[in-house]
Image (cartoon, rainbow over all chains, first blue to last red; front, side):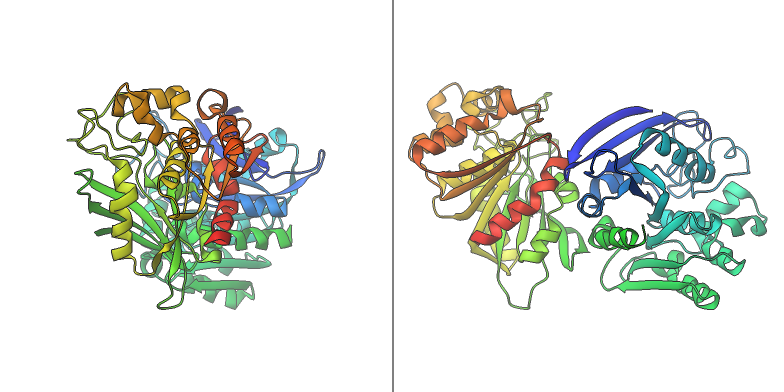
Length: 276
Length: 276
């Protein structure tokens, strides 16, 4: 692992790192904020998965998580959203290919070689964090994310019961089976068999028996994607039916941007802190 | 004035605007955050001047001022650092020309036509803010800034006694007469007569009789520019001699980046709120 930058922030260290991923076959960049802590202390970890077009940098620059993470003593990890680079397949649209990995392990060529963000986020990067950040206590993990990253957070938590003691999301895609972004991405990465998509659909995972203790979701009412793409009501229905405690906060006047995310970030960090 | 974007943040509105500046002869872009407030309320204004290479966007994205401004009810205005555009003179270096206006009214061609950031910030933009943002109470103004923008904040406040009830800066250039960035900029924009530079040098302005009630400065000890360019000790000496109350906080381990600025931003907003 290579350190690209480290900078003091809120008495902790905001770092950006790069490593070669065996899973994606590419170099991957991610950021980690380590809050101030006593020598030898072990700290819970909050994962934040970003949305379409984003890299680690969007939330690192604009997410305003450091104050809350410093206060609660939480390590904050922000991965990239896809493999990237000249040898990696891409698509000319912004909602497929590089920057739009959708947290799946692709099975369709040419994507299947590199686009393995599920395994990267579930397996490879946690192992790297555990080995390179000895203060990170991976027995206490939370996960959150925005939009496509909210989809990632929900589906990864549902597929790995017990791993994440805290789950939340900002304006997540709750059902790729039921929206244009999801249809495009999952058909492209996984092929036409919609049964194979269910492992990557939070609502379907819940219908198929997936359970979480509690979920916090913030969703702006002025988010231009809410009706066509995000559809929080589908998750509400699924959670109601399954008896999952969903705190769905419709935030009046907020949009899909980091102005929305940063406003409620400290609530999500606090939500994680209570559970970690 | 044209609205480029408006987005809800911390219950207020973060906007980005553009207008044609008669002073610079160019379109100028700036951001304004208006915190939540009662209808008809009038709110104090905090100006934030950015550093070399920056536009309004750097602090707007990374400054983490909205939470504190919402809490204290302060309007936050972030201008650009120079005129820009295809017809505007430029220089290939990053510390002169576009992105490096140094808050002067240039007198040397070809810069004198457009590079009039002093008049733009002191006169034209405040008048625009007053007319377009009726909640902005310009009888209660504070000013702050970073690096070159800290220089701008200090010198503009010193040249306009009584206008700013609060003055602070992050890692400011305190004496362009005494550092390479300043020598390059002021000789380029104003010519070789160093007497003409004194109106753009905080330490010289204080030696020449300029006074402020109090100044807050945060300076990171790991800032790579502190010894050669920023030299806070020169301002300390000038303030000591003039009897100006300077709170100079050397912040251990912090650098020159927005990780430093954002960490202490809420202190600067609170400093302004106490005085406004």
